[in-house]
Image (cartoon, rainbow over all chains, first blue to last red; front, side):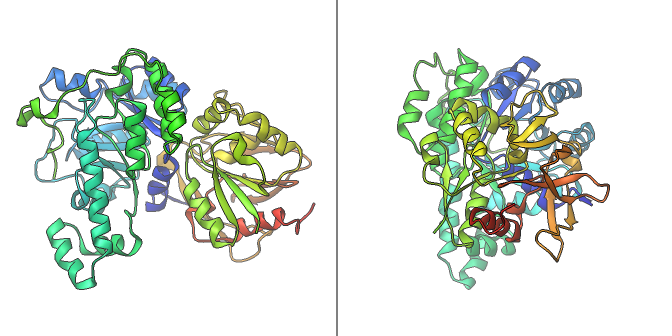
Length: 293
Length: 195
């Protein structure tokens, strides 16, 4: 019996498809998320909006918080480590989390190197802003990709930008001749073999979710129609006025993302969504998406 | 051409649709009760069983699916699908359809780091062995008299079973390129393998 193989790592991501992965900071939130139909939870000490507000260095969550949430729910539990902080990742693997997010939401530990993820039995998900970044993370062993968006803003604009960039570049690679692929792989900063694979298959070799700014059911369905295979919702649920209803509504809109009548119905009377931030009002040094490369 | 539905509430339904289409059947994603009409068979895919189970209830699919099971309708469940077909599940968070006389333990091999791949002897489909991909997989803890266990791990744990026209697999044929178990299911749909 072979454990921790590429197939079982990417396979777990495939099992999460069509689902909503919700950030939670307490047992009660984890149970609300599970009850609402989340396909996994991300166990954190603070949601991105609070990390953004708090400032300072954001690190891996306290293991006792993560373990308590693993005890409380039967769906997969993910946790975040800092970019490049392979010892936080080793600790999370030792705790038995089901997936690690090497995340720009935490303060990077290494500005030059991401984690070599092939060394781990636990699968990783990583953020990207474009196809080149997605393929670099894949080369390092990420078993799942998500857009970065701009976490903790409740503003979908960056997630849309990143998803469109990935899709556009996939289409562009698909239309190229073999000799053009070599130059394009160089321009993307991506391994040639992966660029050729995308050219042949017309898609990424792993599952691609949307993240970073999803705050409403229509945001979730927008990302799905743009090509996401599922969504992460960070602050959008537990920073809204009625988290239980918002969570259920976002799940419903994700399942039925091509059915406008169901999305409209799910969007009724949800109370106040999380307060949003205009990206243009955020100082450059406070943006999260440019973290990592 | 036979029409096969794949329950598409959450999980790896696209993979099942793709494999079924390679076997020359019309395959459709199913999200609403009305979409069940006119089908010759149904696949409940892998995914998160808690999630799929909750959404089945939320979207009023429990009653129509239960009555299909009682009518001998051909259904194949993989992983989460097997959990949802079972009579009893170790996890109180899940209310299964109770269609097959099997008791199932969820996440039986542990958390994700214990997910595994291994070859399985499955006499019903012959040689060579079938490559089983087990992801946070359930195991069959007990199978009733009317149930045929089709595959076991080396320690004897049941990981595939058939009862009437229902087929339950703890692993994921949809993550492989091996079409034999989908073909086996279609032979049930076609009535070639009546028991």
